[in-house]
Image (cartoon, rainbow, N blue to C red; front, top):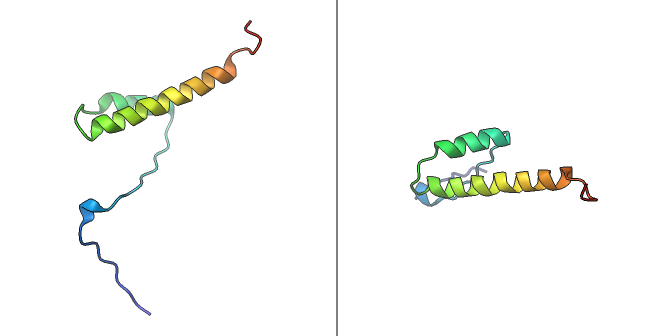
Length: 67
């Protein structure tokens, strides 16, 4: 059996890109982004990602008894 795969409108195809890097590099990338769409949207997602990481890390490192 043979088949072919043809994309008629490549700009309409959704693609997922998975990136893994230290939070410091995420912040550096975010600082380099231009403030125009779609980069501002990526910047917003990076800000959310770094905020969530820092919130979780601070919550786990603070003493539970408040001292």
